[in-house]
Image (cartoon, rainbow, N blue to C red; front, side, top):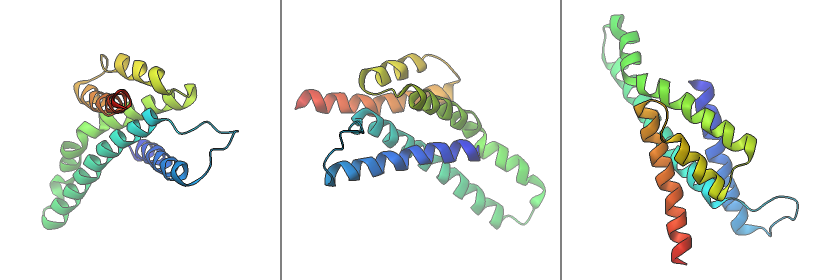
Length: 143
């Protein structure tokens, strides 16, 4: 889970950095402009990671305030079991997006296809990521 978290966090940070760079610098002819859809994907992933960080914080607080250490492993498993499924699934999605350099409609199509597969927690997260990407489309159409 730690590796998957680092990969997802790295992508989120990369998208945030690209957004700030795009605001201040002239676009380079060698690099494509940042993708609004990838930035939206980063925003959605940031939400998921914030939820994970919240669960880890809650777990730490419960362990520190409970003198009985006999149930620590059970607590870890119970509180983080959803993320044991979600983080690897999102990491695989991100690997596919990066390796195929999916942007725009291709990214939307891939997210839509992935929403129909996997376990319920993964589907729920994918639908939330798709919602974020659809918000870009709504804003672009409104312009």
